Length: 190
Ligand SMILES: Cc1cc2nc3c(=O)[nH]c(=O)nc-3n(C[C@H](O)[C@H](O)[C@H](O)COP(=O)(O)O)c2cc1C
Image (cartoon, rainbow, N blue to C red):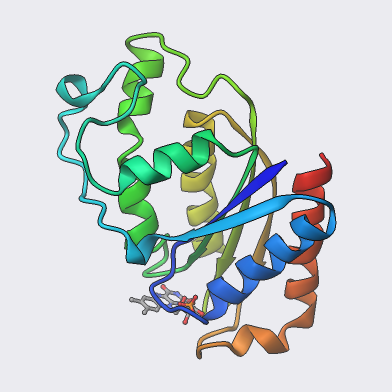
């Protein structure tokens, strides 16, 4: 069982990072092999709305930047934990740019009728914010659910941690960290 963490925060050692690492620790404790990628360290250009010309035989974008690495890592995983801070009531730009680059997969699936992700993945979502706005988390969740549907990932659960702003502040939120650990176990064990 391979569990891939995708960290959508620009702040390493920040709240998203800590929460994601806790979920991956939970996955490892249940026997999974884990790996994480930091979107902020990748060069992924925003989608250009040329999916019909740009889709390759596999159903991925032909635009040769670091999204290729993301496609490969997701394809080679059994489960995915996507983590993002709330920025302006939504996912971080890093996560949104990545998600938009899966529009080729949408075209491949719905127009070309190709099964790009034939294997059912397991998906989980982690999110943090400074305030306690439930509507922001709900907004982010709805985008992530949409993304998971495109990549054929079941939604195994989520951890939303409000009231964290400063870097690393989430370390004092033991309950959220515990929930992330448990979610890591759940996504591994099925
Ligand atoms: C550009 C930007 C926009 C933000 N927008 C929101 C917001 O709309 N609502 C909120 O509650 N927090 C907002 N925040 C606060 C972050 O969600 C919060 O500090 C979070 O803990 C950052 O996670 P990180 O440490 O993983 O980067 C924003 C922060 C930044 C930098």
